[in-house]
Image (cartoon, rainbow, N blue to C red; front, side, top):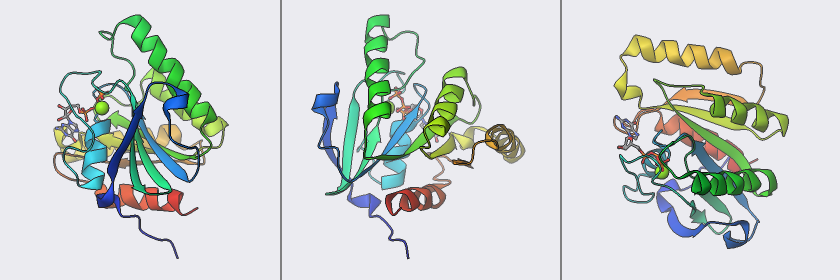
Length: 199
Ligand SMILES: Nc1nc2c(ncn2[C@@H]2O[C@H](COP(=O)(O)OP(=O)(O)OP(=O)(O)O)[C@@H](O)[C@H]2O)c(=O)[nH]1
Ligand SMILES: [Mg+2]
């Protein structure tokens, strides 16, 4: 029987700008990744039910560090910096890209990736690269097509179908609709996190 994690117990643990700033690489960690302004921090807040847990902003590029939240001593949620925002100065962008890559490549406790894509703009180049990369190293990925509230039912379903079709070649990639505004898809997302944390 799988245990349900207590997401509402999440507390801020620490932030890091380089590998050595991260907490001990033990237990299990799930990282939220995606384009700048896609809604990563909002999704974290919605899933945990804690409004100000991860900082959100209408200014893209807000999250510029790896922020870690602890559910209990051995389970963590991680908010990664967004990619693809042109106004973040190039050297800063490069530094965070390098750190994110290193984190994804080396972090032993990383057991799954939640990829956040705006339902209106899914499967951009960097998203596609991440999907193939995670598949190539056998790391499971769950995609949240967020801001679903911005589309009517039929376009939502069409977007879901299109992305499902695009990722069907990858065995460990799943997709769902999500909305932080309308609180859609929370239980489905938690179920996936529970599966990873319990495997
Ligand atoms: N309508 C709607 N707006 C959302 C949703 N999720 C996030 N937003 C808005 O989108 C903007 C960006 O949200 P964040 O959660 O800060 O996005 P992020 O991906 O963490 O952004 P960076 O940290 O800058 O990469 C904010 O203005 C949010 O209020 C959603 O489900 N629906
Ligand atoms: Mg953020």
